[in-house]
Structures are given as C-alpha cells and as structure tokens.
Length: 117
Image 1 (cartoon, helix red, strand yellow):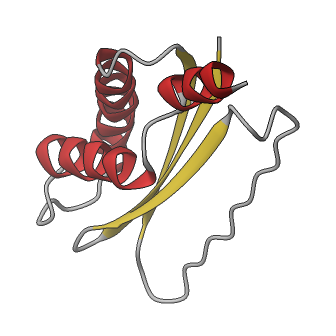
Image 2: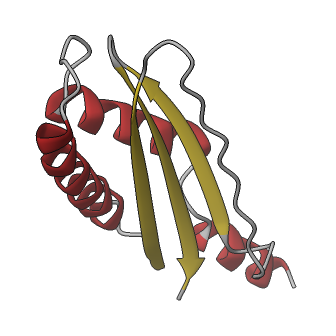
C-alpha cells in the first residue's frame, strides 16, 4: 500500500503555482502587458500561446495528456465575459487549472486540463 501511495504522488500533475507561472510567462512573452488588442494579432497570439504552454507542460515530463484552451477578449466599456467548464474524470489523478491574464486593452482566460496517461 505504501508503494502505491508513493507511485500516485510521483505521477501527480504539476502544482497549480507552476502551471500559473508557465501560463503567465508565455503570455507575457507572446503578447506583452502593453500590447494593444487587434483581432488579427489576437489570432496569432492565441495560437502561439496555446502551443508554447503545451510545449512547456509536456517538457515537465509528467505522464499526462494536456488540453489547453485560451480565449482573448478586448476590454472596453461595457464588455463582459463569463466562462465555466466541467469535467468528468478521475479526481485523484486528473487536474484542471484556470488562469486569468490581463493586459492594457485585453483579457485572456486560459484553461489547462491534465489527464493522467
């Protein structure tokens, strides 16, 4: 039993702080806090961000499959966004993370789903 518990802890997904750090770093590098929102740029930023976040998560070497989603929203007077998710999975081994990132004229919501292999 003790070795089984150790085995489960060895395969646990990354800590939430580590995932948040990865997301923040990628968005800061890809977009930048002072960038001005344009639809054309947001399409490129969004694609690059999810690719880079996924690449960094995989590089952590954990036995997980990852799903990364990202939504960019232009911030203006009267704009709003409500996002939610639900997952049906193994609560012991699988995890999900949400990170809210803000820049001068935009907001990004990133979800990461980590599913044990």
